[in-house]
Length: 505
Image (tube, rainbow, N blue to C red; front, side, top):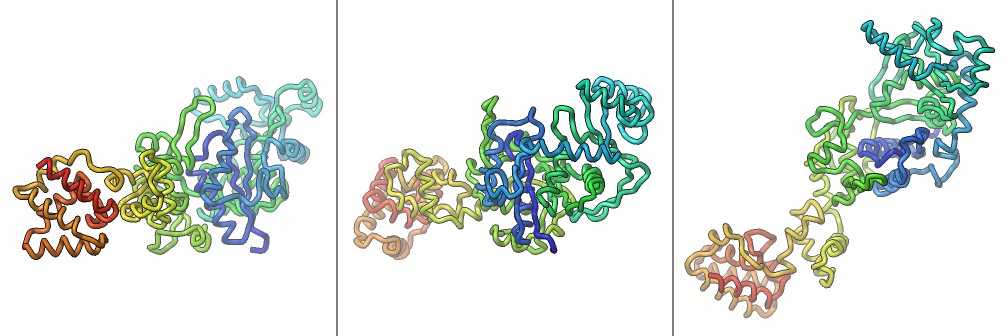
């Protein structure tokens, strides 16, 4: 590519960042890094009525947690700053004025009540009201195309509310290109004259977006499918200003687990999974929304499963580090069709990344989450984690899988007891206690040799010994290898637990 690749992620600070937004940020990041380009964060806060306190900080923290930090943005490498649109509003009026002066946009003074009346009249006649070439100069609408210069100036000087509308062309066919969707043809007669600027001095998204992308030298606009209907207007605006348009790529929607409709927070609440990267507390209602981080997901797992929501590497490989994703990512391999969100697959990814974590790091997190572990040596906890993490998806699973390494059973599973405790079990267990106490070099190997050797020599069925032994140690027929448990809890505790079960028989 002849120009340096520059992409931008431009969220609105109207609440927590949905994983659809994180996926858009990720694809921008991967594309930028693959082409040695820049990943820019721009905060699109022109709609101050919907601004939510803390949302911008949340966006930045989310990107950092995912390991996809921006190269340039608010407070960081401000080469083309400022990066908040509310701080750039002085820039936009001149561009709106330029379009008006060149006859490519116009002032419209219609009130919302007047426009509503037009819509209702059209509905009554079975039509749809569109503010465009069809009616903008017929005299029923109040704009500078039908008013004289003097009348227009008088309204402006009187402080009447106005908007600046783009003058969409008539009887043209727009030929558009999208990296993901290919060639698109649009009949300009179906386009409405979008509002670009309002009398309160704030631009709409359409004008601010185009101006900022141009001034920030953005080469590729990678954004969600919901912006595809705006592509025609944006291309027309680039042409109107005489600017080179960036290349566009519109990402597919992330669909509900059923495959029907866009994934929403409600779907997550209903089915029990988060749709935000980090937990979020609404500053007004104090309602807390779950986050992937707080739910126990690893950032690497989140990035890996998000990459597969719309992108396909073209191979059977599913596990990708961030470095591998950068190397293999290609917009040409992003699908047009919506990507179905699969909560079970996200857990599958997390289970994989659980196995890659250091036992000591997991043990430290496990210890911090359980008051019962606060006085236990973290190195011992790490050994336990190494034995049980293969069956875990989250650190929150650890206690259920390992509690017997830390506390003795207080009761025994009823179903397991019926299966494990038979006539003569007490005699067998008393012999196991003898074998445990007589094992001088107390290792997994020696315990295994002594007990299994005794079972074989006496031609006893393994189940008759191992099931009640496991029940004594764990309180149920579950857990890792029995000899690992015996070694970890020590000789005295092992004998004590077996004696406790014998007393109940």
